[in-house]
Amino acid sequence: MEEFEQVDTKLGECPDIPNFKGKDTAKSELAKELEKDGRAVIYGINFDFNSDKLRDESKIVLNQIAAVLKEKPEWKMAIEGHTDNIGGEKF
Image 1 (tube, rainbow, N blue to C red):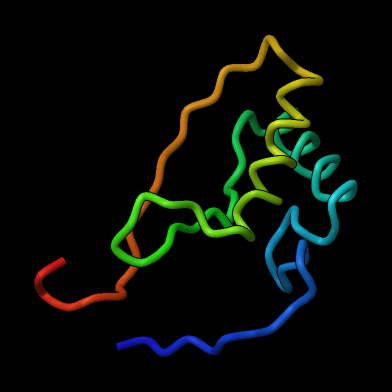
Image 2: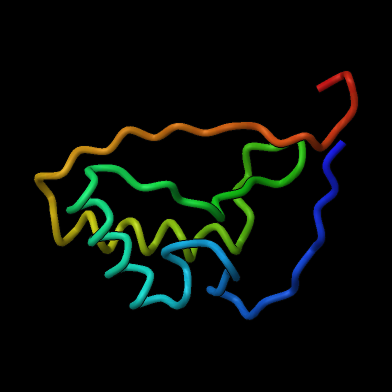
């Protein structure tokens, strides 16, 4: 099983993850990636365990996406999500 290390960062920063170095930088980097490739991998949208409630830190990422989409209302978006490996066999 793969182990992960928790890294504490300032709100709005995710080390070693493209597009998320700061609010304005993230927005422009995300827009550039979408313009270039027509798609982007986005990290940092998480939910509370065993819940549909978004975690507070996810709102920063969602606001960045919303800002890009407000500037490009003609863009369409497909959202794909995946579960993590937290929880027992019951999940």
